[in-house]
Image (cartoon, rainbow, N blue to C red):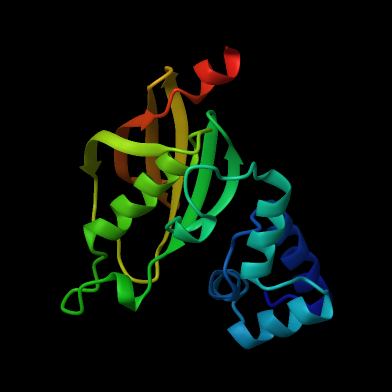
Length: 190
């Protein structure tokens, strides 16, 4: 049964509140309407587009990245607690995939995870010393990768970071990164 505009807009607000990173295309499919209808509904409800929602969430939940410039992070960081945890998202577009089969090139998936592992380090210097990685399944054009990083062990010179990357709820990549960091903590304690 088709919903009225008012009912659809109420459900739209609830859905975006629960999952702020949902795309207009996903919303259109969920509600059985066109993408243009979703955009008009968002406009009427003063709900910003996805990129603005991501920036808004990121501004409230981000520590300052120290180990590299924010624009060098692959994907959009939406949550960052230095030396604890971080989350980034990467939408796979045509420029990320092989033209023949529309599967993402592995170096993009790895780069998202690796740059998140660098960004999580609370130090001016963070370099990947070693990585043990595993791809679980190919990622296709149009899919969104959500990478979640957490520090599993912190030392003065080395920090272990685990990164799990998902498309929806399916694990597509797992990496254990051993990160080199300067001895900043021990210098500050002196």
